[in-house]
Image (cartoon, rainbow, N blue to C red):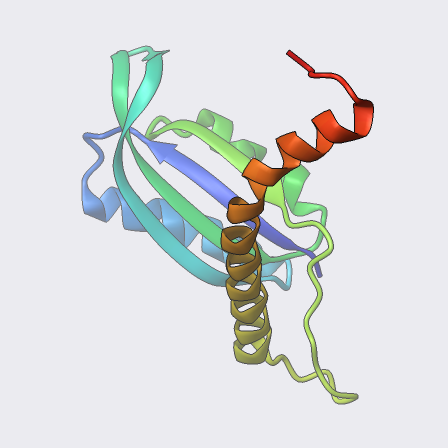
Length: 152
């Protein structure tokens, strides 16, 4: 099953009980489709780049949530009931591309190893970037000497 992120932007005045109710409804919908919610993050109140007009006013702030889930691809067409939800300002479903788990022949998930490998790759990449910064000054001299004339 593919991995999806469901981004939910709620009105800033929505109480926590209503927020939990909405999350539970989406989670039950995913579970009924043999999916699983793997992560839930609250990104807090965010300032919007423009006002979102709804029937009860214009909103310049919102509560942002991210639900990560593994579910069948048909979930995209099944979440359109969220359009009628009056607590939501916007919602967006994002599919993770080329997401693969490392595992043995038994299909066990080893996410910790995957994250360690990613961290080591990123750390090695940062080391190379710092070393390349010193060589940037020499590149201009090489271009001038190869062409025989100044680029200015």
